Image (cartoon, rainbow, N blue to C red; front, side, top):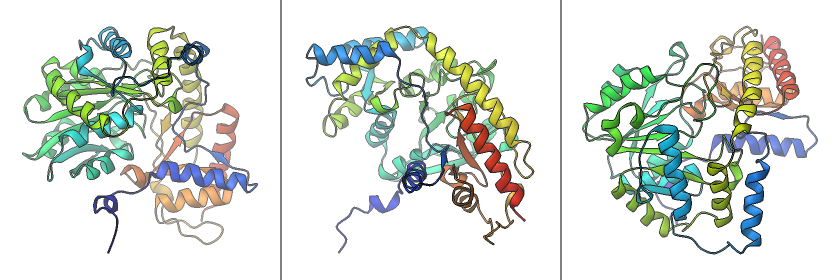
Length: 400
């Protein structure tokens, strides 16, 4: 007799973490490995944020807080939403979680009943469908191809909605593609959602501030205020503030949903780390000029990687609008053989052979729901990216 829940068999471990772990293991064995699989900035957390955390420790601010965050931090989140997104929330409409992932998970667990459908554009962040499955729902995927720069059309969205649809999950700029929807593109999607009042919108805006060139970020409830009462606007400090390990995410949404999410959090983790909350407060309230400086480096790295990948026969890589990922298409390499005689029959074969033969760790596209592709995180130095692209080219040229 199995001692494990049926639900656990429905989900898989994170492929991004698995590839990062494999690369780390190979490095520890003395291999020369360049890892481009982890989705986190290589910049250090700014000093004023670290200083706020140290001061919180020194002044004894180390006790429990309310289960879903300190009121003072919720107020800062309200100000952020008002100033940056033109969205008006009160603290009772704000949830603070242990990273953005917990926010999304709590919301899905609080709302999904067996048989409920959740629409997810593919490629998607690897955790979305597994969270839906854990909550007892059914993921419904809409394919966003490279031909459309990895964005779905309004027609695709409308076709996917049924009377069982509970949520539409939206992520722009996107992990894994970096694709960002313009205000006009987003307006077209919200016009479809207006037609279906029973559909909730979960917008994952974690890469909001990592937007490049002339791309201007917008969020659904900002573009279409009539969706405000059924939209959960999710965000956090992880990416733009280089605070991935601090684990603070937040969301604004309908008060009844936030109350249900608070109930779940009170019976699971309780409050996010108190010290991290004080650090997040300093991040939201402090100076932010470092974001533009970091983005200048990200743009340079993006241009470097896209330029070099598009010089490789068999690879096609669209230019993303934001985040720190590229998602090249490798259709032209499927069916070829490595020097060891291994047939590249999938993007997973490509990525595993790439790691084994030239020591570059990336994540295969099937993990994100669209193949044949792979994801590169360019959140590392120009030197390592240049070396990695050279190795990728050498590997691809060696295929027969």
